[in-house]
Amino acid sequence: MPLTAEHLLPHPGVQSRWVRLPNGANCHYMTAGDTGPAVVLLHGGIQGSSGLAGWGRWMMPALAQAGFRVYAPDQPGFGLSDTRPEFRPRHGVLDHVEFVKQFVNVMELDQFHLSGNSMGATNTAHFVVDYPERVLSYILIATYLQPELGLDPDGSKRAKLGGITIPPWDGTAEGMGRMMELIIVRKEGISADLKEMRAYMGNLQKESYGEFLKSRERIQADPNLKQKWMLKNRLENLTISALYLYGQLDVLIPVAAGHEQEDYLKNMQFFYPANTGHQGQTDTPELHNKVYIEFFKTGKVSRKTAEEAGISKRRPELKHLVEQGAVAAG
Image (cartoon, rainbow, N blue to C red):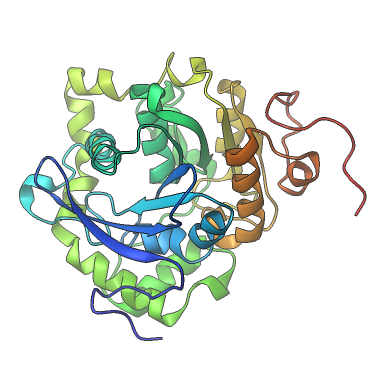
């Protein structure tokens, strides 16, 4: 299927929209659904990522059909976000949190459910600790929060997990496909038109993405920014209902990182879905849709869905987040 005039992969029920943020940036976002509680979804951080690439093909339509208004913005440095120098994410996650705040304000979303995958999960965690009054509940998918939690201050322990290193992207659609195949388990989720779209976006954001890659060093070099960046003694003390999904087959940030976070973040219910890698919403979308819809509708996950999603056995469940009792027959 050919891409649209905006170089987007067309998908029924998902619309491309633009809005001007208070800081003057032109913001591109995908949306689905007209009524119901709002859900904001934040995409990951490898080149070519966007709201549509991360969430638009399977999860946004399903959430909309379940009665939610769904928004997936292109964060600075990604997708079709504003590439002008003044809007580049020089301070990474800190700039992304400010972007999300401006986006939800201009969309008049006073309170909403929030979720993110990989970089988007990191941004979700940071937004929640900065603006807890705005978030009804949240879900994280596969990220490395150890530095901000004080478990790996300089990030050096991540290499010991044995995860793969993604080689530099060559700027082509074919190279984009090879990069995606390294981390996505369900290869049928990598279509030719998706590669083309992501390659266009990756090239569009080349300079802005370069600023993003330098952001961690800038934060670490500034004691004031580093203090703002830390999540230790903040995230683990929140009482907002939260789930964390971590694929058993994640090769980018292996599942041992999820186990370590689980031991620290005792206010979240963890799940380890099978046949799932780093981008769970692409590898097992039907399962992820079940978890999201149940949790965002009721504040709980059914016992049957919890078992299907690989509910953690490492410690007792958070009883208020998972329905108790036996799994229903069938």
